[in-house]
Image (tube, rainbow, N blue to C red; front, side):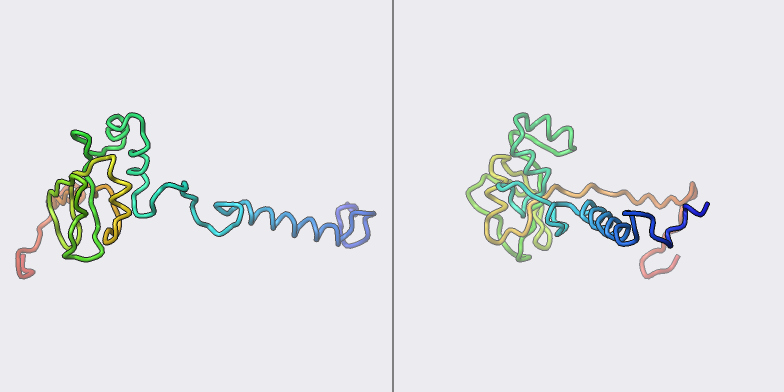
Length: 159
């Protein structure tokens, strides 16, 4: 078992070579854990994808079959328009004009609207638009916890 000891000189494969191999292996391991060759951790977007347009909506604009694409992803599409939320930079801002946008509801700078699929990219680039995204799915609060009905407090915090 004395051949397992690395304390002595074991031919051309000495401590220095082992140290170099260890350091190189560590560098390769670290470089392999990054998202891109430069190692800055950013996700690459295509050159044409606007930063303010949610990825799935950009993919919808590029799809050859937008209705099927939308159905597969749970997006609501009707007559060539998709339901989106346009987040405005200003709470009282206006939605971009001239794009045949049908506003459905609005709250504090969030506008839910039906927008032509063909206009999504242009709308996301309009000044005053913070982001264009799909609406969040609603969450039901039924008041049931572990199979029992919860007693919810009435107004004023009293049960």
